[in-house]
Length: 145
Image (cartoon, rainbow, N blue to C red; front, side):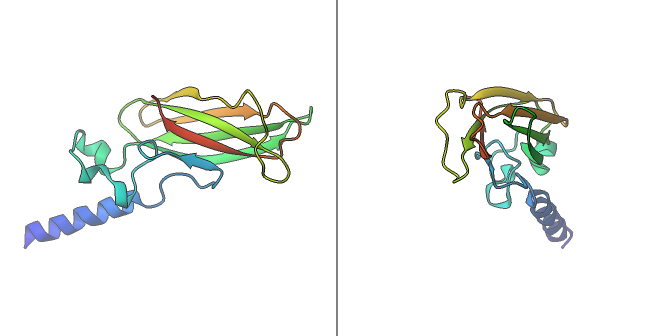
């Protein structure tokens, strides 16, 4: 009976840890394996390599996304995130700049850039649109290949 109760408590903890992870902004697209695990893709369903990190998620969360137009008329974007892992996370990100009709602008600056996040620490990254026609954006984040 105690074992059943303990397993039930563990399952509830895993469920709660998986909720609310990822990004609060739909413009930020986190690829699988980068974001903190969800209930349907939790590390506990795989081989456990680091019990503490796996229990609370082994990825990054996007905490805040801010945009503004600078004095020159270009769109600035600042992303704040947090690495929930007990390890350094290395990942790549790419901005896609959108015009007033939400169509992607053809730019050469939309390339994958490398970023590292220290264990248990906040991180920031920043982008400025290469063209004044940009009124919005999307950000893609993937594992470092």
